[in-house]
Image (cartoon, rainbow, N blue to C red):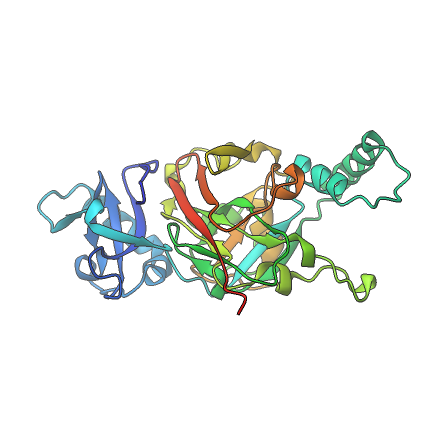
Length: 330
């Protein structure tokens, strides 16, 4: 049974349905003090989903603050509701190689048996590369599919073809309004809030085997259905003092695997949003995943298996809990 950790600030947002009838309609909700208000009924424009709320973020935010303090409204207890992914993004932008220690660990884990370098030499070389990337101010971003999004308490189906499924808990920024060619200084004004994403990856298919020059195959390794458990909440940006100083923690079967601060990011949220916007047009509800910190399964030599339970939390954003289920190979 899902347990809910209180998010930061006076309120957060989510998507809910009646617990006793999961197939019934979902609705956008305001979470405050362990109770939920149906925003499809409480807001004048009757949003059917949370993305519609985000699309009117600037005008709706003051209303949400007022609703959170209104005890007369028709509130429901959170325990009586099922929690879904907070919203459906149109686009998902994913930052790769954005945590210094994470990339160093991956480089060592993926070393060829014929690599003449010692572990210390390999670490030193990739550390120098990371320092150069930071100095040159060049983030690395690729695109994911919205169909990968799943709820924060849903089972995760491990595809039968995935030989090395791995976890990657990440801070995700939610875009509030169209952003194109915005500066780093302007970028924070385009972020509605933050949520948690677990960007699952099949390590065995990250790199193409048929032709190494092709490089990475993000479609194959990251975009299976349900490979991005999202949520539970969208926490307004105003409720987090500093997204660059949050603790990202993931446990597998109760054992801590990832436990790192977002301080280890090479490029912060504002820099990533600005960088993406120089090419693409970010839209309300889009997700910007900020990269995975150190502590992935490939580092530990222990990948996901049938029955594993992942528990992920980020300071102020609550916690998600997902169980891995092997796909029936037949």
